[in-house]
Image 1 (cartoon, rainbow, N blue to C red):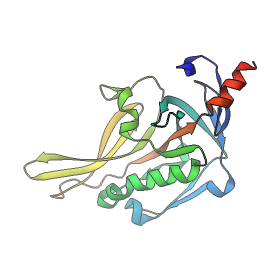
Image 2 (cartoon, rainbow, N blue to C red):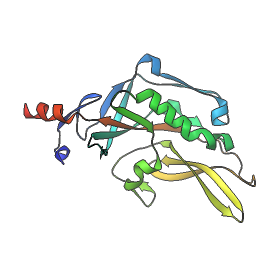
Image 3 (cartoon, rainbow, N blue to C red):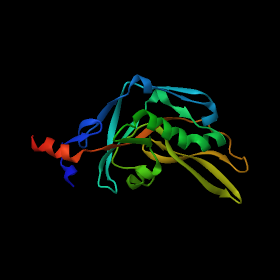
Image 4 (tube, one colour):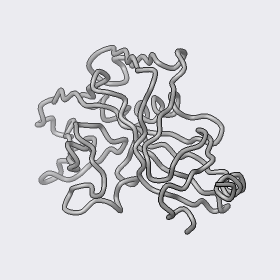
Length: 207
């Protein structure tokens, strides 16, 4: 694929970026504050305050059914924006809350954003560790799970990514044997940015 050329400049929905290099987005003031209600995380009202500039780390390249090319990035929302999800309420709403926050902050024409999920990183996971990218810190993933934990008891929880390792955070179980766990983790977004291939070809041909 032509995009494999190092340092190729790409014309994207975020402007001109270099393939394989980090990019930055400027968050408008209207999107720098986000409020999470206790009824959605199971423990407390939480206000997120974002920095004006957020750095995007290149992750992969995708092609959709229509032939459109997307550069995919991941972006943490900062250590100051750690949130907790607790118990049955946390497990029920975590995926929705994480996806809504990331979509509200980053999505625009040509940009699709949501919370990073297990499916997004599955191809890069080996022995429960994500390969090829440095992602220090603890993050919620927008993927919930359930599993049998003995007899007719089933446990429910949320996946997390902790210093590059995939983990499970158990929220509750049918027989109420799991004590509520209050873990604070950061939010990480998965962002797909459309590439304008015609303009990209013209840009690089003029170099």
